[in-house]
Amino acid sequence: MTSYNSPSSLEAGLKCRCPRCGQGKLFSGFLGLADKCEVCGLDYGFADPADGPAFFVMSGVGVIVVAAWAWWAIAANPPVWLQLAVVFPAVIGGCLATLRPVKAWLVAEQFVHKAEEGRIASPGKHGEGGFCIDRRATSDRQTGEQP
Image 1 (cartoon, one colour):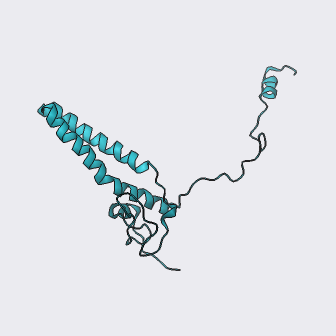
Image 2 (spheres, helix red, strand yellow; image 1 turned 60 degrees about the vertical axis):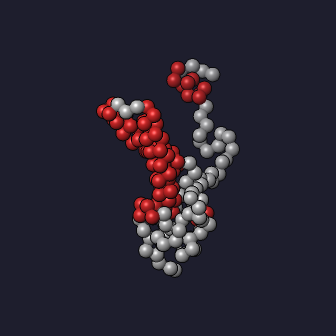
Image 3 (cartoon, one colour; image 1 turned 90 degrees about the horizontal axis):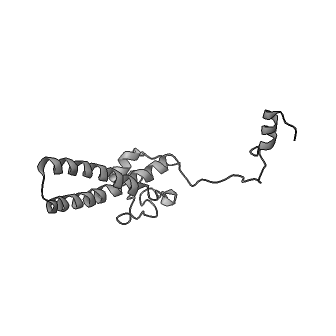
């Protein structure tokens, strides 16, 4: 079996590299994942970060930019046109700059923790498995009444 000197998930994320070998490219486009690593052959089919990266990036960048904008707006009282000219590019640039590394980090975390889609082993039938409680019988015992 081949042994790999795997990087930490944070290092793989920041470099946007394969989470197993740390060498191959993770992305085939700006945000599209490659099919597999060109160095070690790891299939990236396991990776599904969904909307997590976008949510974390929008939330983090939004809080930081809005906090900095609020401080600047109160301290310097710039005109509205200048505020718009600074804040919108800051939000858009911050999101675009951090989206790839955050997505790569979440993919690396999925690899490290062997995350996969949840499955139900046995759905069973209604009322089986001890999860069904006859509430009438319980309430009758508490009140002392006979059914």
